[in-house]
Image 1 (spheres, helix red, strand yellow):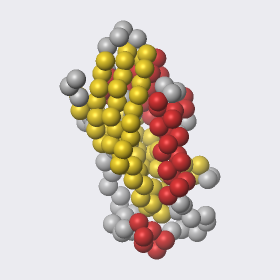
Image 2 (tube, one colour):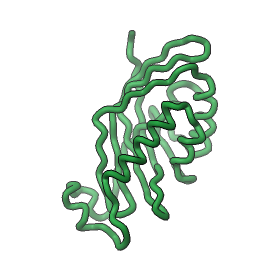
Image 3 (cartoon, helix red, strand yellow):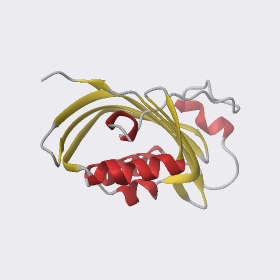
Length: 163
């Protein structure tokens, strides 16, 4: 799998659920019964994803994805199986993986749905010594099941950074 399709995420997502066009301060207007979602819960999941990613922990990343997860990476649609297999291969080919996530934003879409977005900047050194630097936007759609937040859909675009 090539570098661009194996890298972690960014996603563009259009929700059709009630309230998707509302601002976060109106999120409580369309919450279902049960424990209300909080931005802090989703942010914790986002940073757990970041920690697994930077630790080159492909299993940790996969554990944060629902089995029916799909991704749009640089225009290519990828399944859960493709992403988990590609992540293992990709992370195993690295000597160093550093990523910075800025402009992290979480928008609650209801009790059990949230959207997070951020801008990443990756610096990677392969086992062969090649330096690869990319940047781009990422959007993740989170879903909570049984009290656990995981990613259902992701979209990422990687743009090379010239040294």
